[in-house]
Structures are given as structure tokens and as C-alpha cells.
Length: 429
Image (tube, rainbow, N blue to C red; front, side):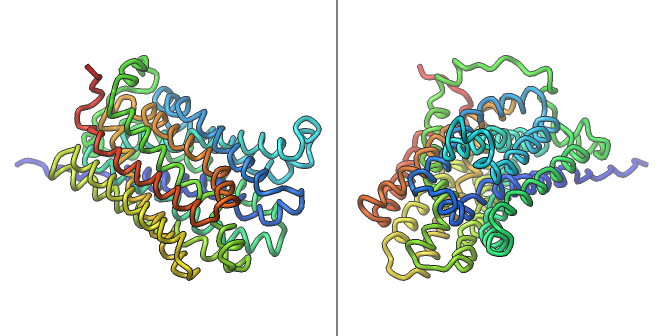
């Protein structure tokens, strides 16, 4: 008589839940300054343009270290890399509260001191999303990776949703500096939890059984990572178009991360606390749409092939994001504006699973490096939008500024017509 086969343990879902929590923490640390800026700016005499430069400094540091962060995750494994990254950016978060009172001011001025600290924060957080993709590639089977990365990145929605109202309330009651101190403590606690629970692969985890390990064959252990084939990357049309399209997504995404709260307060007329409440709406929609889009691209890929599954989900998300953002910029009603712009954020993140799963489709071995390369594009776009957005608004008004962002999203949607991750890293002839 044959013994019953043991069912697979569920440790992969615990790892996914931890990635969701880390994602939430990254965006708490990223978005909190967009709320505290309301008191930081008058306290230090900062203009909109100067605050935009401080916002952009984070994105520059974040963009520059995407590829090294992804390479480190591929090379060293996600357990140690994410732990050290969490500690790094949590310390930088706390330093944001005191940067303008340190010796950095003598060297760089107030704007420069804040820019240095926020840029350093960006360097630490740059590791996060490429490491998430590496972890998803290592812990989930191929048919679940779109949902897995969508769920992990969905923590962005929760972190960004709870930050504006909580940060505004803390700021009003305990000063804006307290927002950064509390966020720093949360990150340090998350670093300890990740180190204790996480492992690089199911084959290394003491809580997994053979059935779960069999679901995810191991490609290469950390330390056996092969040299990165940069020439192959550079000659892959799909990868180049994927990076270009994700650059468009990044431009629009960073408007929500940097200016949305101030837009609601200064342009749409909401008070500080109400503005913080409604600024959470786009991120709550992201929380639902990001894993939904990841699940959808997996189902479509399984049924209609990898290319169709990724392209249909990516084009739909980016296209509808552009249309709803354009509408939200021009409607007169503040409530309709919040609703339309929130849907725009949701549709934007509906596409995220297709993008990140495509990098793993191209090569599981280099999933971290490829996703870091792609996310570099997003953050180059993101480095522009915090500064360009208020500049366009000052010259031609916020409706035009948001229309430009919407057109960029539509351009990103059309670029999906040139993307075919099902072919792998196929070079140009």
C-alpha cells in the first residue's frame, strides 16, 4: 500500500507576506516627507522648487542603485541584502528629522543637507523591489509570479495609504519630526523579523518540506551566480522597450508619491487632516489593483501565452491610467478629481505585475539584476516628475501638468506593442 503524499508546506506564502510588510515600510519611509513638507517648508523657508529638488534627490539615489541592488540580491541572496538595506534606510529616515541641524548644513546648506540624507535613503531603498523580484522568482512557481510580485508590491498601497492620514495626525499633535522617528523604529523592527524568518530559497528553509521544495527548482545558489551578460541585455529589444515603458510608469507614479497630498491641500482646497485622509485613496486602490493585475497577467499568460498575458495586462493598466488621470486633472469637482485620480493610480499599478513578471520571464537567473535595470528607468522618470510637475503647474496650471503625465502613461501603453518576454533575451539581428 502506497503511503499518502504529504501536501506542500506554505512557507512561500509567509515569505510573500513578509515582502508585503517590507514593501509597506519602504513606502511609509518614502511618502512621509510629502506630508511633513507642509510644516518643513515654512520651518526652513523652502520654496516649492527647493522641496521638489529634495524629493528628486531620493529618486536619484534610488535610481542609481537599482542595478547594484538587484545584482546584490542575485549574488548574495535576499536574506542578508534586505536586512542590511532595511537597517540603512531606517537610519536615514531618522536622520531626515535632524538633517537641517547637523554639520551637513555648513557643507551643503539646508536644502543640500536634506538632499544628501534623502538621497542616501534612496540608495538603501533601491535594493528593495529588485530583491522582492529575486525572492518571488526563488519562492514561487512560474504560474504565480505575476500575482506574487503584485502582492509584494501591493504593500506600497497600504503603506502609502496609511501614511498621509497618520503622518498628518502625528504632525499636528507631536510635530513633524516624530513622523520620521516612528517610521525609523518600524523599519528596524522589520529588519529583525526578516532576518529571523526569511531564507534565500525553500531548499534552505528549515520549515519547508520536500513537497514545497519540489515546487520551485533551484537555479543557482547565492555565491554561484554567473557573470552578468550585459551585451545580451543591451541587444534585447524587449528589455529595452520594457525599460522605456516602465520609465513612463515611474513619471506618473512619483506624482502620487511626492505632490498628491499638497495638490489636494493647496489646489483642491482640502484642510490638512482631510487632505491626509483623501490622499490615502489612490494607494488603497493600488492595494487592490496591484495584486489583481498580477493575478490577471498570470491567468492570461497561462491561457493565451506569455506575450499576450503580459501585453494585455500592461497595455490595459497604462492606457486606463492615462485616461483617468487626464480626466481627474480637468474636472471641477474636488470629489470627482479624487475619485478619477485614485482610479488612475489603481490602473497604473494594475500593470505592475506584468512588468516585473516579464523580467523573470526573460531570465530567472538574473531576475534581480533585470528588474533593477527596469526599475532604474522608472526612477529616472520619477526623478523628473517631482520637479517638472510643479514647474508645469506654475507656468500652465495643474490640469496641463497632469495632462502631460497622462500622455506619458499612454506612450508607455503603446510601447507594450514592442514587448515580447516569451522570447527571452533574444538579441537583435
